[in-house]
Length: 407
Image (cartoon, rainbow, N blue to C red; front, side, top):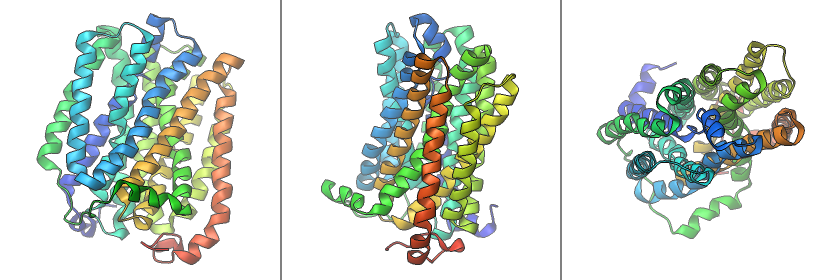
């Protein structure tokens, strides 16, 4: 997959630093999910409050991605990433030293963690601008595999909380963040080709293009499903199958690893067969998997298998969407990454909060899963309609459904 021509085409140290920064930032972004069982016990939270708790960082990150995207286009991705990492390090250190004593303060920490989630709008343009169009899917798939950081949180946070307390986990998280920050400062470089800064009003011009809205919707389903489940599954396995939080974290980590590391595969498949063809398969599989996950199973292992399947489909879709985006909006990739990432986060907020609300109102997560499966079906139907027009307008890449710089 990593051909010699690919390795020569871009800047490998920047690609690695983008992945590492993204990975550790994502670990921090979803930290409240793996810590959710311990936090809920301390503050006596109901299912809806637990859903809100894990959804707030996702929504905060979604909105801040737009801000980060504009910053990337104005001051460059490297400098933007350094600013965001400094904020997260300082904020987590303050939360650890001062303590978290009420549910409202937990939500405030969630807003802070959203700054880490905004790393999406930095890491992807940082990598993208170094690579030519034929390698966008693979390069952004590698950088975007930093989604796997959510698995690190699920693997380690519950066990650390059990031994040291969940507030201390916030302080411990600053250690890998500091390593990632130093690595980033030494290895990351902005690409020579940087778009000229625009007036703020010009950034909204991209929203006049229907393709921007469709790409935002498509990513809202794939990434929204991925991050929504990443934030919620530790609580889900603990609540539905009475698994110990540490074991529930292991189950969640397995799902997240599967979805993260198939992301580059999704990008590479889109490079080869075309983004639309790949996404049609993705949405069909995701809809089937999410609908199946809505039903109770006699064993948590069966539930794990179904959710692994679903996360793989969603992860591949994340890579496929970003095979298309940089080619249609190469000059605006910073702000478009912000807009697309924002809708991805909004999708995750909807899924995480709707799962908690469904559990509170009905005693089951089923309506939350089915609602998101319906969104995947809607995306599939939309692609069936859009495919012929996109193939006619964007004939430049393999599969006949990728996008040129101008339509």
